[in-house]
Length: 182
Image 1 (cartoon, one colour):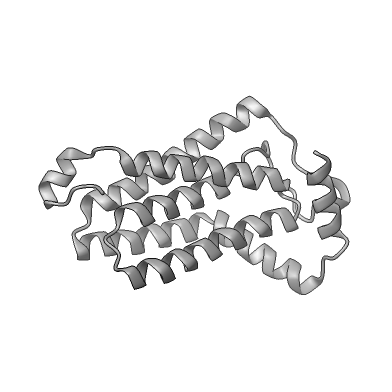
Image 2 (cartoon, rainbow, N blue to C red):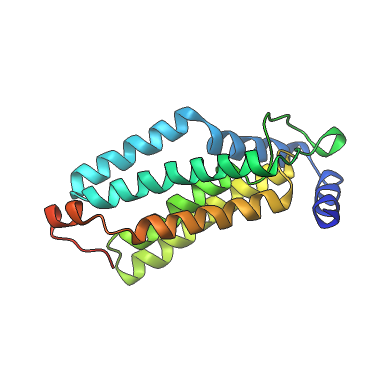
């Protein structure tokens, strides 16, 4: 925990109003039900337009599974969130693992694994998605909503869940589209 405390103290001593505003915006984007619905709607439009049925189901299942797994781990670990001068925001519930980190990592990993990317698309898309996941996770730590290891464990949980779900043989869905998992 000393590394967590050291990192959070270091960040808290360097907070500025501009960075805090940007971090709050990133946190709000990552945790906002409206943003999640909007992202889901855009995802649904892409799934329907491209006829990526099993891919869409896989990404959606990965997101929900990461939420469930992270929630179960939170209840098992029951780690308190940062408080006092270390926290700019007060978020309820337990801290480890970060649910937002787990969900975003699961979506990115599943998306990377199941969508038919060209080499060029794969590089820039994964870079963009990784930057978004990183920014949301860093924002949560910067604001004191999570300890750094909460986010790291959340990313690991999400990446694992995303990989497992993407590897599941959704045979019925693949047979309909003629696409087989890689």
